[in-house]
Image 1 (cartoon, rainbow, N blue to C red):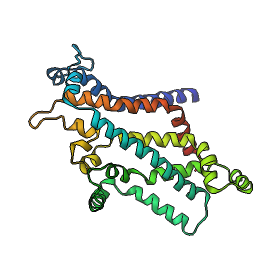
Image 2 (image 1 turned 90 degrees about the horizontal axis):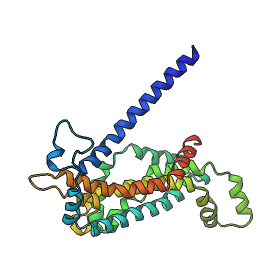
Image 3 (image 1 turned 45 degrees about the vertical axis):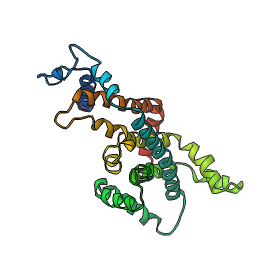
Image 4 (image 1 turned 30 degrees about the horizontal axis):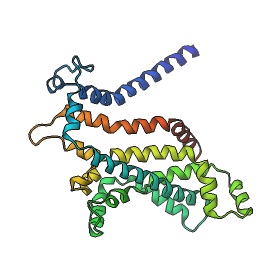
Length: 276
């Protein structure tokens, strides 16, 4: 009887997981399918998930219409800068919260966690006004600075660094190692899984970021790829096939980065989630 109940529970779990997979992957498949359809085929009902007459006209038109070089260069600079600097800053903050005792540490950390409840859209206007006063509109600094640190990233690194034994750090201090040496030579190498996981999160978020670059960059020379592709829509007609082809091009680097760091990503999620 128990085996029968266990089997039913297992089937239900697999069905729920399968349903979740279908819901998550359906928009991506629709995007990929639409990029190979003509305008007439896109609006056909019921829709064809596999195009009857696949065409590359959207990709051809995309490379003829859009100058990929400038937005691609801007996206690479912004995404890599945010990812690299964010990993450094958030791992330093996580190290301080995890391994150092200082007055008000716990209250400060609780306050940091409280900021997770504030929607990012609320802080956009004050941050925009501040950057405007600093003269950073239409600049790389304006695109990069707001994404350099987040409460989630600091919390994530703190959780992982807490799993590193204190005895290891004490032994290094007894041997005369400085705090910077301990951080760069001991903490960071041991945090590779967490850094890879956080790096994927930050790279994906900054690569696909649309709203903030749209607000801060009013000059076409500072457009990132998502903003440039969104502007492909005409004033009276939106070419969905063209935009979906652009979306496929944009998402390819993210998939490549994820596949390269997949091993560390799973390990980092597992370790950070189990030990807090």
